[in-house]
Image (cartoon, rainbow, N blue to C red; front, side, top):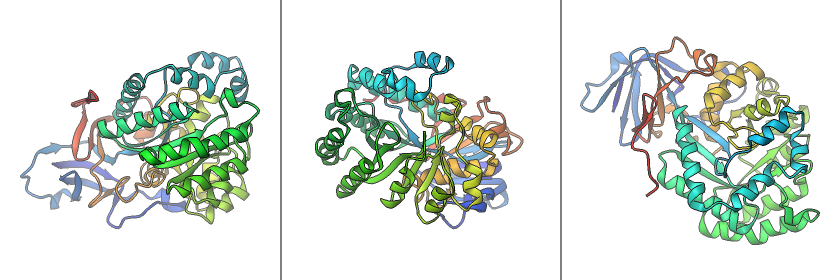
Length: 421
């Protein structure tokens, strides 16, 4: 496939980088009036139109349009049953996330619904959500468990994620988040539940190869630093990567625990000060910010500007889930990053592409326009500037999504949607 007459080819790399940090995040390499050549599912070549090869393969004319690397959404919970819009009303009435959880809502509400839902029904719901995410330009996604909280139901969730890996053109990473909340049966016995995660859940998950990562919600009222370290230690004995939900509601110590255990990412980070920033500066751990949750919960946003100015990388992800961020639209995430966290459009794009890929262990193959990388790109509708992408935050601007070198969305319509067979 040859894409010709590209108005602007965005996020090109002639020398690959694993991630981009600090002031470098504000520099986004682009080529005006460009071509992009795709062969065998990979990016084969790119450059100015004057150097374009004579076409001997299918051609797409991108006159007036831009081409971006597909978004890499490194934090989602899209395998869930039903929705939680009634809690939305509780939020409007002023109840906090923690108050809703104490009343039996929140994560535990989703746990009950998931338990009562078949694997097939969960798969169908989740497949519709990942198809929806594709229409806004997402090409790679991490999907967490964590609404099971029992051996049977955590396995059920992760088997659904495996089916999504097999049937969706998206690149999918699976994360075991058994330490998402303490289930009702273990209230007052949190340490025993941590024992169950380590002794009863991790072994079959590892045996079936169902997870790439293990995550822990290290937070006040959920899991302590000691709990987190126990679970991460066990995860590493199985050769699994680790992540941490950290500092969403308080300065929980989750960032330091993640860095100590070599986490590929620590996520949320709403409560982050100089101590945490200094800790991250000494590490290869990616800070992942989830502004969709801050928007939905009306909570203060993480200090993205301070992190970048201190020389850190940051990634952006949607946190698509039923309780605190019921959207997988990464373009809206870019808008929130720019408007609410004072990130520039260039920084936000880097955070949602290459740095998002890094937070999934995918930056060797995803997240930028680079020769030899997987051809996951999207072609915009006619747009005047890069800045227009986060500026026009409700406008559908993705015209064509190409994944693994094949068109998957054309003019907003899904091509050859899988039936899961």
